[in-house]
Image (cartoon, rainbow, N blue to C red; front, top):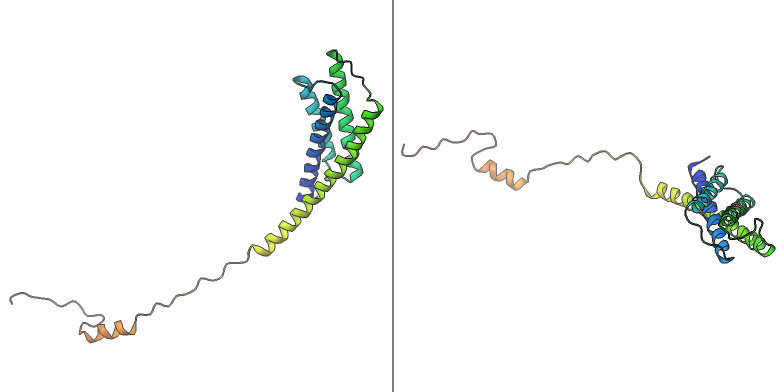
Length: 178
């Protein structure tokens, strides 16, 4: 499995886990339940992380697999919230009512399709960036260093030769008074 495919699968898994937990907790709060805190929130996070890890383990899934994963995550989160609310006197039933089950199913379908689209767009964007990098970034061998020819100006050469000093002559000895 290529790196892009595995990263797209990991992205889909994270989105499945996060969306499952967030939508189930939002539905629980709208239905009159309390927003989980403390150990219940940790348990919800663990359940959603496990569902997301299973969903993204084999790379990006098909839409049906993502819909099933989001639905399973919402159902498991609902069960955790119902059981923890039952201990606190919330009185929520373990199995959701028909309208709540329908809302969870519609949310699972919409989220599964959107998460599948995100995974596909991630792979497309990574492919485009790879081709752009291949075409725009030059990775060939460096060219040979250019040799520069340092020429002394013809005027300077003529001046030095006519001055009587010459090019390799030793310096004149200058004597004062003698």
